Length: 401
Image 1 (tube, rainbow, N blue to C red):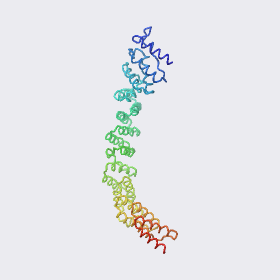
Image 2: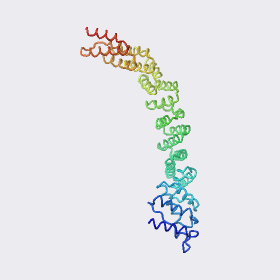
Image 3: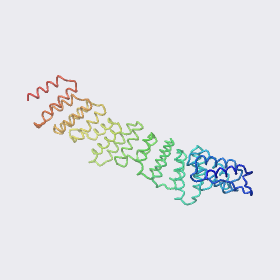
Image 4: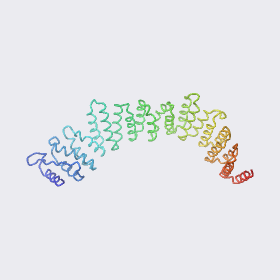
């Protein structure tokens, strides 16, 4: 087969004006096998480059050019694939429909995006008044450009598809994703607002993508809608946008509104949720302020909520206030062994060893079986505080009874 191909190619090159012995210009045009090698593609391209036959004069030449495009893409011979596409553009009617997408791929790969887009637009135009067909054609055209990392051009096509099918959530997300990939953060933010206006259930996912791709400043318009749902995950997304913009005050105010807008009997529960959301975004001080405001008089608050407040204050670097609050939580919990050990662990994680030792020594009603364990915990806390003498004295006193 290869030998036959070479003979035909040479015959074609030798014949004047590509004509055979009987004057038929198509008589010596070779056929490129579907599994042709890269070398065969090169030889076929050489024949095509030297032909003087117009595409419409010889269907066999058109078929050869189309085969070079298809096989050239498969073997990575983009230059010859593009050359064949250039030849086909001179054909009456332009590039044949069955090779149009292949030529668009070749052009997109070598950076000829405008030429690729012209071919893809021709595919879209064929859908006519068939709206589902237009959407499929637009998505297919965008996929060609996405494959070649031409996201800006792809975004334009997907944006048109969104306007044809505005209720399709996958298209909305794809539009924003292409804009983000193209580095068009502001456009992605605007597109997100547009999509979320029709499909509010996508608001959280859109916000997440904008924040993760460094476009938090373009997601601010989504905050109000997210915070208004009363759903923890949406509040988390809203606060993440504000935190990404270093708007600590805005984040706190958003959570405060979330707390206020809850039912009267649910506000403390919502405050715990909001504080956790702020804390997760690194806003521990704002979280502590929000929770303390909601709890009011700590003497009347639930011990676990007060303990949570103490932990937030520790993370916010307010050690003195945290120790006082945790002491209050310990008292509210009846100075139990379980609460004492848990709070002491928390204090020691933040290097408050002396405060932990003092709290442990105030635990009430320690079971006989656990007194040695507790004594050792107090001694270790004193040692970690740098008070070896205090440790020794305490353990000696505990041993005596």
